Image (tube, rainbow, N blue to C red; front, top):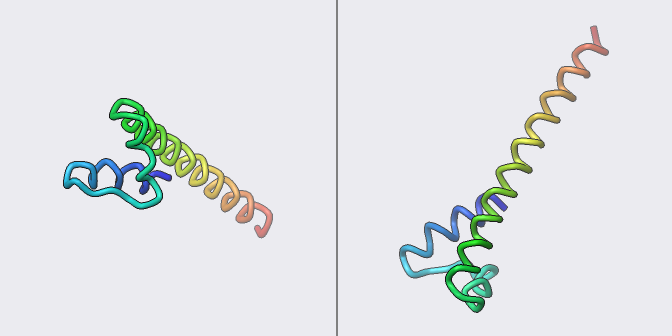
Length: 66
């Protein structure tokens, strides 16, 4: 999600768009920017939460093997 949001923002400025996200422009420019922002933020949150849980599981696995 993060990469689709960031990629969509970059591609917007070179007059291109991902085929999967071409529909966002049908609702107008403000809605398209809101959707891009939501994808970017939601992807970043999911990424950070996943990294946090991954490190927690790794620490738990180390503790059980010792």
